[in-house]
Amino acid sequence: MKKAILDVDTGVDDALAIIYAYESGQLDLLGITTVNGNVPLEDVVRNTKKVAQLIGDDRLKVYRGAERPLLKEIHSEYKVHGSDGIGGALGDMTVTKEEEEEFASDFIIEQARKNPGELTLIMVGPLTNLALALRKEPKIAGWIDQVVVMGGLISKAGHGNTLPTSEFNIYADAEAAKAVFHAGFNLKLVSLDVTLETFMNRDTIERLKGTKYHDFVLKSTEIYRDYSSKRFGMDGCALHDPLTVGAVLDPTFLKTEKHFVDVETKSDLSYGQTICDFRNLWDREPNVEISLGVEGKRFVDHFIGTLKV
Image (cartoon, rainbow, N blue to C red):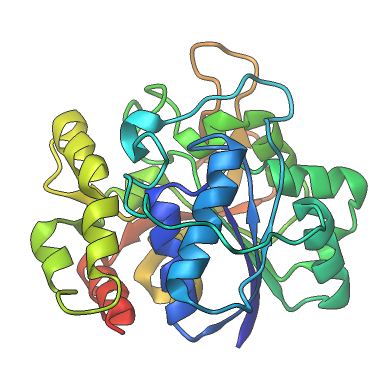
């Protein structure tokens, strides 16, 4: 199995990504690291512990990470994820799981050092933890096999979900994203323009009827689906973070190309924009494997099939 760390800001779709990663049986999930993002860190840690308890495997380890971006103010998304971050789906669950003592970025460094060339980082929140790890140990860029990031907007300019130019995860800490993009990682970007091509509506969820996760998926996504319908005219919600896990489980879900990508950090108008130099006008070596298309139905079928336990 592929050794992996899942870095989350749990979040509805983060919760689904955790379950998908675990139930796939394809990943040796060394730990789940948490970061401020969709909701503040305390909510993220609590939600992540609850999802781990829902899964029911005591071997799942949760690590506390960065409580704020490197430089900017905290920006949360309660309107998308509900007041607790997971749509109130596990409101009656008491948190009993203990978190690990090690700080998230230190854990990332430790596992990269112990597993050179074998570790995949699946980053589905802001990139603050990885940027902090880079500051402490720049050599990790050469130790990690692959970094797969949910973030950015590549081919649909003006269709961001935070600013017209920008996707939330990159916007939430653009300085961290810029540091990661320039560090020399083998980096794949699963961007918003592609994840929006994956849809899960009520009918999709009902395919889980009678299974362990049906009630959680239905309840947790209720606010998320309603927001997506009103804001984007979508029939259901997009599976942003699960698709990022899917890109590790089966890379053929995505059509990709390598290009040079940079992150805007200076402009109030376009802070957090991911700029892809398709024509190589900057004459720079490609640093990111970007996603240009997805087999959405095949991915959703795989996601639902994996959760049918």
